Image 1 (cartoon, one colour):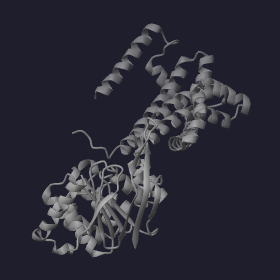
Image 2 (cartoon, chains in turn purple, green):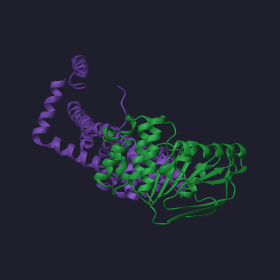
Image 3 (tube, helix red, strand yellow):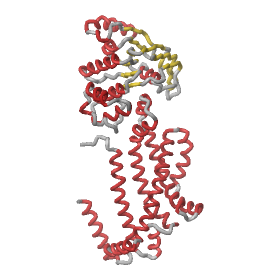
Image 4 (tube, chains in turn blue, cyan):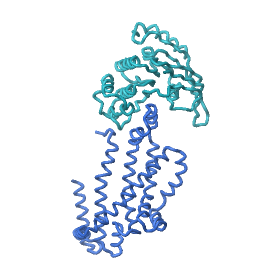
Amino acid sequence: MLRLLSFALLLATWWIAALFVGGAKLPSPPAVLQVMIAEASSGALFLHLGATLARVALAFTLAMSLGSAIGYLMGRVKLADRLGDPWLILLLNLPALVVIVLAYIWAGLTEAAAIAAIAINKLPTAIVTLREGTRALDRSLDEMASVFAMPRWRAFRHVVLPQLAPYIAASARSGLSLVWKIVLVAELLGRPNGVGFEIGVAFQLFDTPRLLAYSLTFAAVVLVIETLLVQPFEARATRWRPRAA
Amino acid sequence: MRLEVEITGKTFRSVAGGTHDVLAPLKFALQSGEVGVLIGPSGCGKSTMLRIILGLDADFRGHVSRPPQARIGMVFQEPRLLAWRSVEQNVRLAAPDVTDAKLSELFRILELDAHRSHFPGELSLGLARRVALARAFAVEPDLLVLDEPLASLDDALAGRLRDEIAALVASRPVMTLLVTHSLDDAVRLGDRLFFLSPRPSHIVHEVPIAIPRAMRSEAALTGIRAELAALQLESK
């Protein structure tokens, strides 16, 4: 209820500001809604949104699985940690823009280059989070599994993975919000479709209603995915923890 | 089956760079159906010894021969349950071959019936210890290792669990190794008691208890207790 009220207040502020600033710089909510409806009925909105979501899904999955595996390895094996650490520091401090531009130069303005660039931006944070999680694993439970001769996979699934789940959830959550931001830059710089591309076009034409229509729809989709997918997963991963009454 | 332990030494390196000996040369063996009890002062290296026997610590001098196919049931000092799995799942994950009937019987004996679907975080320490016992029994072990399994339980419950351990040991051929502080547990359960010295630990006395477990009445044990108390004083 309070959230709704807060949302209504935001909308009202926008509307009033639009009245003062004028339609070209800040269009009113109905004007933006009109563009949204027009773009949706022509199908363009869904096409671009779909292209962006597909890139997010691919890059996110790639970065999460690869990053989790590397992070786990670095947490478990000292040698891997020593070897990988300098790379990790380099990757962590490389600006997203540099990675994207270099990827386009080296691999051409291709889909693969875009997805790889987005994934590489997410990769180091996934590695760091999972490495921390692996370092925090309870060794006494490893011993328990070993004494009871649990097969490797069963021990990993029931002893190790549940301990890592909160870290995976945290990494997914922060990773998704990072990927949402970077995907638009990658599209703006080198893809012929997607929300980022449309925002680029709108920017060149100073078409604020169009810009807002695309960004707000995108933001809404992000919000829905966060609430319907990420949050339930997080809740599930920590379900066994005794809750404060 | 037979467990043979022959440790010639175990040394820890401290952070400062020095070394100290935890275990001095010691040797004992255990047959199926036998209960060996390790008794010694706190910090004398009993847990280190158990880790070596269980194969968790390979960094020692000597030799442990454990039948390779031996199933191990272990009760650690702390329950070491999986907090994210229910009581029943905790037992089944360690003992996937346990039958429903066997599991029900164990839960009934250990009074865990009402807690099957609870998570370990919802249990008291006493309950969690019983789950750890259920898990160790459920694997139908050839080698049962109990590291102070009855510590911090009230007397009535400790007494009942002691009877359960005795019944399990009687029901199938199992080599049992019990670590305890309690002379009472030792004389009621043990066939052979090994009294350990402070660090570096070695066996000071080995005392067999000849009375069959079922016939160890209070009267029968009084004499043994007095004898053992004298021994314990002497070894200090």
